Image 1 (cartoon, one colour):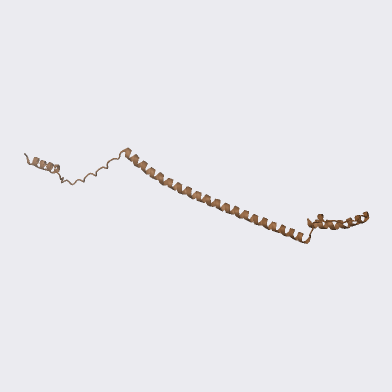
Image 2: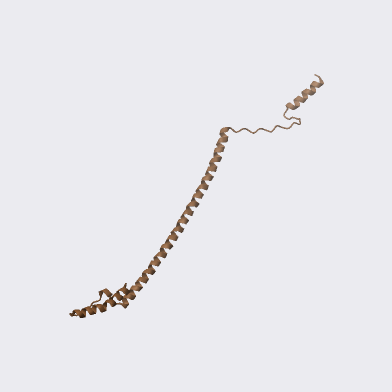
Amino acid sequence: MDTTQKTLTEATSATVGSVSYSKAPKPTPRRKRKSTVTRRKEEIEELEREVKVLQAQIAAYQKNAQTAARRSELEQDLLETSFIRQSVLQQQASLVNVQSALSRLTMTQPVAPHASSIRLGTDLEARWKTLTEMKSIILQAAQYYL
């Protein structure tokens, strides 16, 4: 064997061994490619998580909307109640005024003007004279009564 062959054999045996003495960088290992099925499953899981989060947000918004609707209904009920209460108070005040007027009338006038009794004699001219004199008085009393 030649010396050139010996050096060539030594050089090849040095690289064939467990350790290489060359200065070349190691190639980076390639990542293992995920199968399409695995990628789709992961995508589906991620989308399902997102759907759950969005459904929780929808539920929270619906709950807020329901409480706001209930609150506005309560406010409307309070307004209606106060309006009805005010109307009842006004009617009671009107009734008290009418009762007061009626009680004053019954106190000052013991008998209604249309229910008064008239005593007339047997003489026709005296009867006619008594009735004509009473006419204006009874009409005034009736008008005051009304």
